[in-house]
View 1 (cartoon, rainbow, N blue to C red):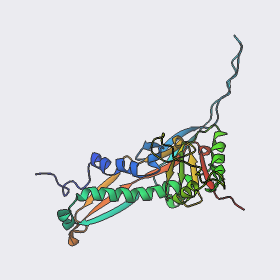
View 2: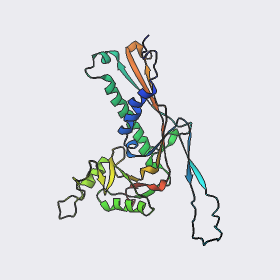
View 3: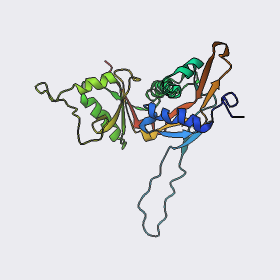
View 4: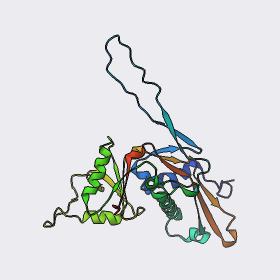
Length: 281
C-alpha cells in the first residue's frame, strides 16, 4: 500500500528541513545575519573564558612564572523549560483540488513568514519572561549608547565604542523609519548631496559606514543595534516538527498543519553588542 499522510502524519526530517528550517534561515533577519547556530534538542552549555593569562619575557634558563589556573564560566541555552513557537494552519480539501498554483508553495511561504516574524520579534526584543527568549536588546552586559538617526556621528560613536574594546562589528539592525531619516541627512545645510550615497562599485545591499545593515521594523524607531554577530549564539532545536492533522477538522473537510520549533539566544561576549537608544534628558 502506498504511504500517505494518513499513515505518516509526521513529516520526515528532510521534508521538514526543506519546508521550514532552510527557508526560515533566509526569512529571519537575525538568523540570516550570521550568528553562531548550535543544533540541540536539549540544554546546551557553552564554556566561556573569564580570565586570560599574562605571558611575559623570560631569560634563558630562568623560571617560567606560573600564572595560575584559567577561570571558565558557562552560558546555558535551551533549558528544558524554554517554550516553543507553535502555530496551526488550516486549509480545505477543495482549496487543494481547485488551486491554480501549488498550494504547498503558498503554505510554505505562509509558514516561513509567520514563524520568522514571531522568531525575529523574540530574538531582537524578547523580554525572556515566562520561559521565552531574551532578545538582543534585552541582554545583560551589552554596550549601550545614544542613537539619533538625524546625526550620523551617533553611529560613528557606536562603532568607536566597540573598536575601543578591540571589537570589529559586522552588522547593523535599524528600523525602516530610522533608516529613511538617516538617508535624508545631507552633507551640510547648504548642500543637496546626501551623506549616505550608494556606491555603484559595491555589491548590492545596504551598508552604513561600510558595515552591512539589516533594515527591520521588528525594532521600534529610535532603537538600533550594532554587533559582532559571531559572538551571538543561537540554539536551534534539531527536530522542528510539521505534523499533518487529518482528523481534527474532518467535520469541516479541512486539514491542519501544526508547526512546533524551539530557539534560544545568548551572547558569548555581551560587550560585543551595542544597543543604542534615544538620549535621555
